Length: 135
View 1 (cartoon, rainbow, N blue to C red):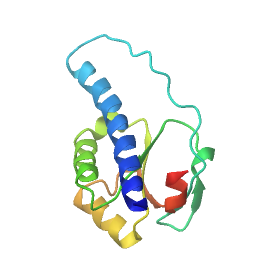
View 2: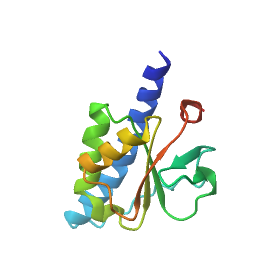
View 3: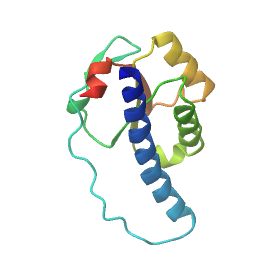
View 4: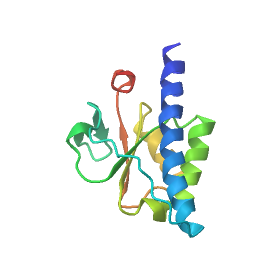
């Protein structure tokens, strides 16, 4: 039950994020001059993330343009999301994109390689506890 709620929350966050990012990218590609009145979220969550290099980062302390992607590597929705983000990396060039999961670093590394997201300076991968995601 708990894992189901986590996956549902992750899918919702990822879906909404992708919708807004891709919508903005598609409008520019089609030459539309429509201005979006949405305000970015000014506060990031209280979530501690362990990065692959051993650093612990408090998401709330991050500054600048940041996108948090909560995902599970075995989730088909998350996999499609990663494919879409990878194919639109130019739209994220001014953002720090953090892929965050509860899985092992071995699984995280495999996911990053499989979806060709590893090696992009602004695309980062980290691990957190389920309690942080739920909260």
